[in-house]
Image (cartoon, rainbow, N blue to C red; front, side):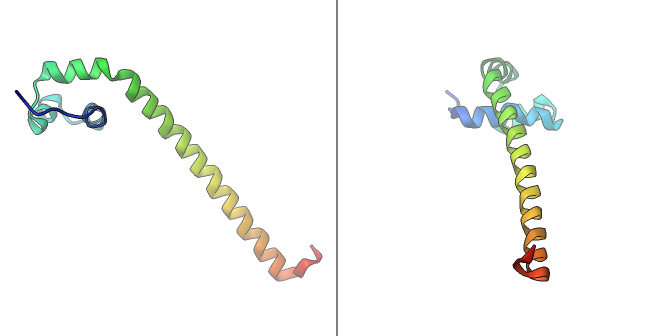
Length: 86
């Protein structure tokens, strides 16, 4: 019997395909058959889709946070330059 992988690890293995690594290399790396890889890919498709959505939302939030930080810094500079009369 081969090594058992956690759900989290399986999702990471399946996501590796997106980076352009050929499936046979991924299978060799983790000592799994291609049929196991394809089974995992179909079984965990919703998890992978959810993870992708979460990454998109996270990037959007990070961009908003960066904009807010920039605004705060600009306001701080204005206040220090002109005092509290602004």
